[in-house]
Image (cartoon, rainbow, N blue to C red; front, side, top):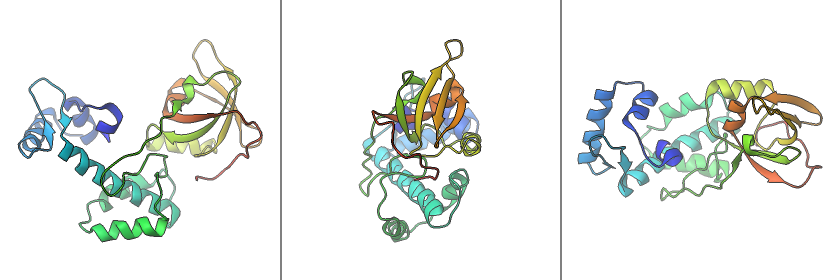
Length: 216
């Protein structure tokens, strides 16, 4: 959700993500402005109104519940679920999604670690640091991805890295800021700064935490 990530919504970013032209986005935003969903002023970023924020959060809730259902109940990979969820989230039945949520046990986050808004559209999000900001020699646990880009997810699959994986920071390269990590009972990898920027982690002082290999 762009507003969740950045606080504002630029027309160019909307155009890029929706894969439509700037004039098309401009027309859409004007309609949303007149409907009271967004605040739009010429040459200024678009801001969601309280009404718009709630509606957007409820759409995100449906999307993330579906993603979790696809992973937990249908055994899809975390790299497969985004496009499917985008189609299912438009089903016009609240009880459909609430039943999914019940079957899952009311999870607080989706398969990528992003928080699931509650039924009132309220998002409770814990702050994590980027792996790229971790200190040499520290121990961290992967809690969330900054992006659910399929190429990133496939890359992490190849490395057998999933949510709740514990990393020990073995070395940070001074030149390019790539990080050498140890994880999964002795596996090692060198992750570029671009990848480390996408991995949100929580510091821990324990080195003897089990190394999970499955998505939690």
